[in-house]
Length: 392
Image (cartoon, rainbow, N blue to C red; front, side, top):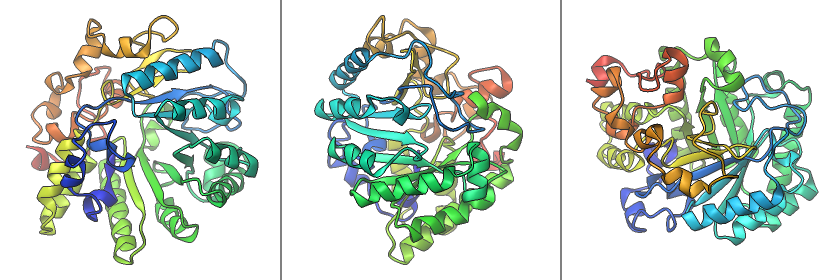
């Protein structure tokens, strides 16, 4: 996760994180990525059920509840363990998390145990009443997935009217004072929509957007051929930076982040050096605090059936199940060779990543993409768009 607005526009300084001691439990949400202890943010896919049929769904969601979903009581036990372990955030995802009847109760319980609770949703089920419920229990944030304007989004989501329903959900959150932002997965079929997403932020006063690079997992694997090439990636990242700067220069405060390609950090830093920006070295310090990809360390996933994964995309490998052992034990058990290596992944990276001068701020990028393309978990991430001249 690379905070474009934080880094390029100077809305965060290294001293901001240092002032809190860089402890996950003490940092405010906007500084959490700079924690030193990297207590895991945990994505809990509470259900596989979804009311849409998104073409890039990493979870391969279906239109009904899947057998074996964790019960309400098992969910409460999971939350107890995560809170005691010091996990600062629980992200309720799916499928569509609002398809789970007890979601609000689970979120309320997480907040009562001292965690920040957020949801990742398609937004279409957030009625006025549901928005009030989510606000009342202390939910910190609602991330609504959009893949473009109406025609493009509805095609991606597999349902006509999905865009209008999502926008209604966003407005319902805003009306009750619940922080809401956008999630956008970039690929060749919607790259041209990025400027329109920035227009939407401004028009509807939406404070935050995360631009996700495509990860080859679940149904997203079928879109691999639609992923951007390296030149297109550089083009869209530059566009995101330019539009973020434009908003900032006009005094319009927005939080803009890119996610799932940690090459964005060095790319941004190199651009700032070319532009001779005095803040460049502070940005590099923040990138070192961020540490790049944190799968298996600073982010983890619990599936609807209780299986524990290194992140929400790495669903084909489970380290254990919370029905049998607490998440905290599974996450800390270095007798599993892969878990042990993920805790120190920079020592195991191969290829051009191994000799890259940005390894300390990227950590080898995404292992899932490397495995999907090469069959080797530790091979170089094919989505790294930096040239040899930029990395050696």
